[in-house]
Amino acid sequence: MLFLNGCVTHSLYQDPRYREVISSVLISSDGMKLVAQGKNYHYIFDAPVTIVKLLQSNLHPYVSGYFNSFSVYRSQEITGNYVLTLNESTPESFVNEAVALGFTIDSSSKAKLVYRGNLCGIRYLSGGVAPQQATHQLNDTHTVVIETPASASRVAARIVLTPVTVAVDGITVLAGVVLMPIFLFGLESYKAVCGVGGKDCKR
Image 1: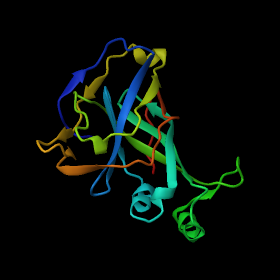
Image 2: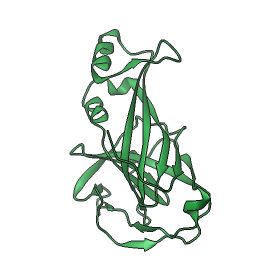
Image 3: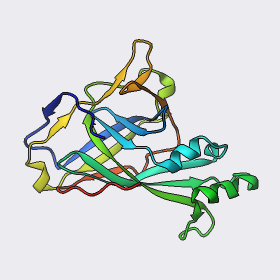
């Protein structure tokens, strides 16, 4: 899923911790990619099938979620997981639809239906590309704390510039495919931890 573009050596000694402000979360119109846009970096993931199906259903207004437990490696691969929670106000007629998508009773609350899934993607430099339309931006921006182990922070990282572009009419595009905003994720718990090695990506 690596998009070939210009790349730069970001830093020889990166701070062990930095903060990223996420301003928008978008999905490609073909349902293939999920994009979290920050001021300094863009995080482009393979769009999970469950999220795509959820957005196509009548259920999505009753679902909220957050990103959690992310790892960014020297290769700039990013893996992690997300949690979706079904609203307690969800009509009973939609509950079965949620179960069919894979939602299960949360063991901690023993009441809420939740779905836990994985994400896999690549971190890119933002190159100053940011959402131009107000409708593409989250109601509130969210700060992401990203930690880098000392062993990884001392290695120069060649990071590819984002393949996301903004057309003259303000439409955000990824490799020629229009990106549309989604508001499932509040991002309050979004945290990334940079590691040394890579892992296989599974949805």
